[in-house]
Image 1 (cartoon, protein in one colour):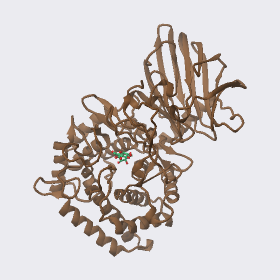
Image 2 (cartoon, rainbow, N blue to C red):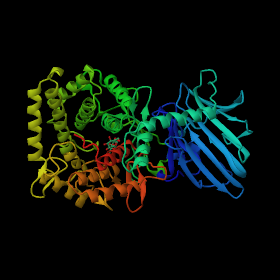
Image 3 (cartoon, rainbow, N blue to C red):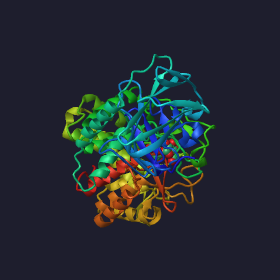
Image 4 (cartoon, rainbow, N blue to C red):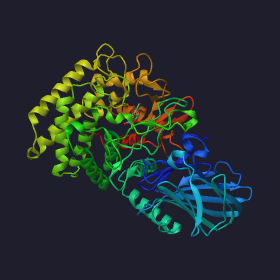
Length: 594
Ligand SMILES: OC[C@H]1O[C@H](O[C@H]2O[C@H](CO)[C@@H](O)[C@H](O)[C@H]2O)[C@H](O)[C@@H](O)[C@@H]1O
C-alpha cells in the first residue's frame, strides 16, 4: 500500500516529477513528461504497479530527511544498528533524456543496502523485457526504455520481473544509481556523471532561490513554496501544471479523484502572479509565450485548460487496473473539465497580465491583444451561467465568483486603457460592462437578510471564493457586506479553523457524491480576508496553523482532513503553495493584489 500523502517528497527536472516516500521508495514517476504514462504507479495501486525502493536492507522509514538547502535534491538518512547511511535523490535539469539519480553514501559503520526496481510502463500495466547491455540493465516495452547503471557497478540480479541489487557501504563510500528514460527505438542514451549532475542541480536551484525578494519572517516556507511552484513548470514550453499527480483522492475511498497534470489558465496565472510578486520575471515571459500559442485560434474555441504544449484534447478516461490510492476509485487520466465554461479564468489571466504590465513587464502588443480577445469574449458571455472555479459537474449556475472575476477583467482593462489609451480598445463599452456586472452581483449575489454574498444567484449556500472580493478590489475591505461575508464563511464553512470550498450539505451544487476535506487555498484566503478586514492577530494565527499542515519537507496537498489530520488530494498542489506565498507576502506588508 502507498504511504500517507504527507510522507512523500517531490523531486523533478522541470519536465516531470517523482514522489519519494520516507521508506526510500519512488512510488510515482511519469516519463518523459508530467502528463506521460507513469512507469512507477505504486502510489495508485501497489508495488506491482511499479516503484523503486532503495534503502538499508530490512529498514522502514528513514530516520530524518530534508531537501539540501534551497534545492529540490532530497537527502534521506537512515540510522541503523550497523551504521548510518544517506541517500540523495534528484533529477538533473535535462538536455535530452530524463534521469533519476540516487546517490548512496555511507556515513558510519557498514550498512547493507537493497535496491528493488520494478518498472511497469503505461501506469503500472506493462511489464517490460529486461536485458543487460553495456553495463546497464535495460527495460523495454513498446515506445519506452529505461536504462539503469551504477557507479561503481554493483551486482544486480533479476527476479519476478524486477531488478535487485544488494551491496554494503562503509563510511565515506558512495554508490550512485542512474535511471535514464529513452525512446526505445533510439541508440543508448548519453551517460550522465551523477556527482557532477548533483553539483549543477544544487547550484542551479540555489541561484534561482537567491533571486527571491521576500524579506519577511517566513523565508524558508516561502522559498520552499516557490521552488515547488517552479518545479511544476514545464520548461520547454513555459506551461505550468496544477500538480504532478492524478487521482490522489479528495476523500479517502471516494470518487473525487482528478488528473491535475495539465495547465489551467486559472492555476497557472495565479502561480505566475506568485512568482512575479517575488521577482521571477523570466517565468512570466515564458508563460506569456505559452499562453499566446495555446489560445491562438478562434475566440470561441478558448479553453480553461490545455496540455503542457498547449494541446487541446485531454479526454478523461479511467484506468481500471489501478486499485486507487487507498482504494479510492476510479483512477482517472485526462480531465473532463477541459470543455467547461469557467468565466473566472478570463479575469485571472487579465489580472495577472495587468500586474505584470504595472511592473513594467510583458508590455508587448500581443500580450494586450490576448486581453482584448478575452474581454470581447466576456462581453458576449458574462451573463451566462457557468461551471465556476470549482469545476462543478452539476448544472451550470450564475456563480458569484465568476461574475466578480468578469468585473475584474473589465476593471483591469479599463484601467490599462486609462493609463495608456494608445493600447486600443472600447473603453466605454468595458466601463459599461464593469458597472453592469457590479450592480448585478450586488443585487443578485448578496443575501441582505443574512448579510453575506452567496455561492450563486438566489442560493443560500456560501462559497469560500467570496473571500476574494476585497482582495481583487470589487469592494473595499471595510464594506459591511465584505465583513459580513467573512464572518459567515467563518461561521458556516470552517472546520477546526480551516475552510471548506462550499457547503456539501443540503443542495449538492457540484453533482458529485461523497465528501471532501477543507481546501487549503481557501484557508489562506480566509487569513488574507481577516488581515484586510483588520483582524491581523487572527490572520497571523490562522497562517501559523496552516504552516503546521505542511509536511516535514514543506509541501502541501490540495486539501486537509481535520479529524483524521491528513493531507488529501493531488500533491503537491500549486493552489495551496500559491496561497501560502500570497498570505506570507500580505502579512509582511507586501502585495495587496489589485
Ligand atoms: O471538484 C471537482 C473538480 O475538481 C478538480 O478541480 C479542482 O482543481 C483544479 C486544478 O487545481 C482547480 O482549477 C479547480 O478550481 C478545482 O476545483 C478537477 O480538475 C475537476 O475536473 C473536477 O470537476
